[in-house]
Length: 127
Image (tube, rainbow, N blue to C red):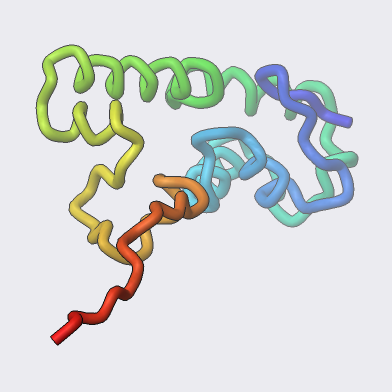
């Protein structure tokens, strides 16, 4: 099982698909990596030689921000927004959608499960 940047990539899939298991590597970057490293993208990951895996790892280190470094960079960006108390930072702090989505309905992914609040009973007027 090839290991790149501390992540075991699946062996039963093609090299291009296996590379997308790395955080920050999508289909386009995976194709670019295979092309630059001179690796056949359709070959299974288990068929890669050590030197091919080393070439891919070297390219990832040199040219791309992926895995731990990218996660750290993202969290630093969010913490910077929180620290300067801009609108986006406040939304992150409160756990609400950041990019302008509506919150009256939906937004359950960010807000979590519904918290039912006891409202007024339907009392009719006595007239």
